[in-house]
Amino acid sequence: MSAGTKVVWPVLLGAGTVVAAAASRSAVAGTWRFVTGEEPPTEPEHPDTPWAYAFAWGLASAVAFEGARLFATRQVARYWLDRTGDLPPLPRSPLARKRRRGKH
Image (cartoon, rainbow, N blue to C red; front, top):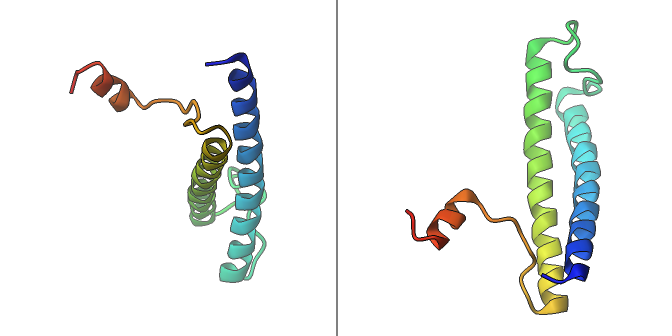
């Protein structure tokens, strides 16, 4: 892996993740307002926030963020592949590492 790859890929991936996080937060908040007719909880961990609201907010936020992060990572990887002709240096899962070493 070249020195440029070691610098450019993390920067692109980080930028994509930041944009994904902002977009997912905004989308979840808008959806919350539409569905409940109320503002989303600002402090879901506060004891005065009902458990159902805190849990629903946490679950919706996590699902939206992970979906947006995955979308952004795939888009950045596609951009990288189109520009360089090579797959980006994505981290390998433990299962992929085991398979590569011949351990199933």
